[in-house]
Amino acid sequence: VQLQASGGGLVQAGGSLRLSCAISGSIVRINTLGWFRQAPGKQRELVAVFTSGGTINYAGSVKGRFTISRSGANNTVDLQMNSLKFEDTAVYYCRFADGVMDYWGKGTQVTVSS
Image 1: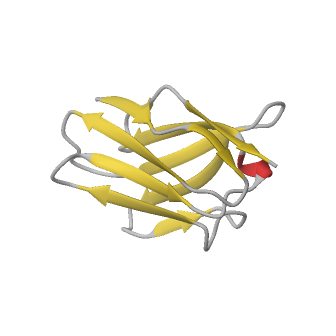
Image 2: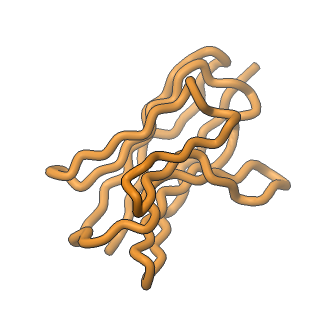
């Protein structure tokens, strides 16, 4: 399984971006599927993920602004980010874990100018 993230860039505060993660290989079981981010000098943190129970977990800081979605047909998982804030600036990573293996894509930079 390989993950390829795209869609990052530079945007003004209040703007929007859409990240997309293309997944090559078959997904049989989902433990975690979604997006994490790492800001300079900070630890990597969860942004939005699908869990094994079929629920979606969002970080409190992005609830109501970000929406995660998945296309089974295209094997992609997207992150729509609206009302972006300066503190959303980070490298965003796509992650897939099936309970046995844990896959990370290369990050995509999101920079929000204030």
